[in-house]
Image (cartoon, rainbow, N blue to C red; front, top):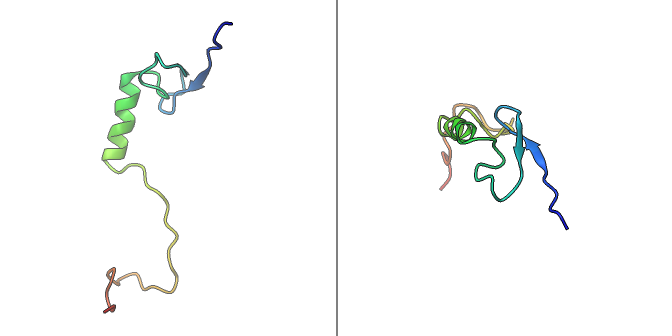
Length: 67
């Protein structure tokens, strides 16, 4: 039985990247794309959205007013 090769689009550049154990950069197509993505995380270019609490004033500090 022959193993089926599958590919996925590289999250950085969109080129096809092999989804195999031999591709040590998966899901990326290359080390370059992997490092670009790592740099974006390190520089906080990617952020998880946070829902603002409308009851909490914007200028309050976390933990202020609690004992």
